[in-house]
Image (cartoon, rainbow, N blue to C red):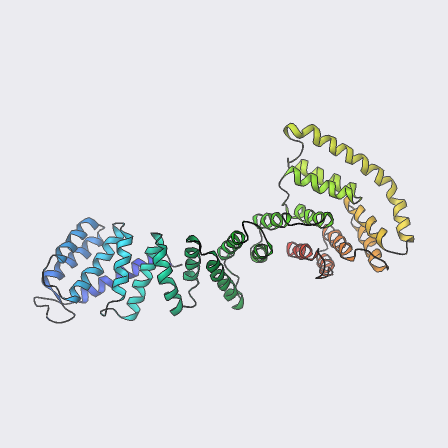
Length: 411
């Protein structure tokens, strides 16, 4: 929105020139003339305002107001100057009321009325007069449909008075308009839309609310949004295989923020036969100082040592498992071996194994195989191939949303 100071400057400048251009005569019979008795103190008030002597300026305005038998035009000129003095003496509410009244005057040209209404809206916003904003803003937007700042102001006002559904509709209209015009929606629009959607869902990150956060990630990716997005997804009901894939992505984007998260991912990895990945996750938790600190130090170290023992056993068996997988008529063992290699930080071998498994018949979870292949390529810094693998996860898969987020993360 245009800054309030610039709006009021435009108003003050217009008042100054109008006042100077108005002839000062002894007779006020003409409709648009100001008598000497009224004009002189008003001119003095304007001069004092230029010197920032606002209290003295107010006394001069009061002097003009005290003149008897003023014409409607003189009343109008007094209110013009008075409104500006009120703003500068921090009586914004009174000034806003006067600006609104001035805008309706027959002495004001349409373009000047627009300036006054704009000033009134800005002052009502500053004074948190929601009733007036909800009255004036829809009228303004009707004649200024491209004024996105005023639409956003309306959404904020609607939200503040509890009209969350109306606020959501206003914000969605803003976002649609920007995207239709080929522009990114402003981050503050999306942030407020996400928060309102969250409230409307009963303070939960439902699919609608998360869809807004995901849209924000497309335009303004940052760690906070990733944490919000994936943290919200974590609250959804899901089976362990989906949770495992979600936590893998959380680790990749730096959204694992607690020792419990690191531990859960490590346990999920181990439960699907990937102890090496479990050890890697625990080590990451120790490096982030989310594990192995304070009273939990001994417990976390025991868990790490236990999982390292499982990893050593797995590592010794891995070559034989690979040969067995190659001889298998279906690709399930190939994919398992490939995922196992990922945990050891060997990326050429998992890519070869997983691709071999995908080409065979009888693959039980082809979507999970594509996820594993995408992660292997990602870790091997082959972004194009990683994106291509994640895109192969079908729309019907419960892993599709996570695959799409991997693509977004890769860029």
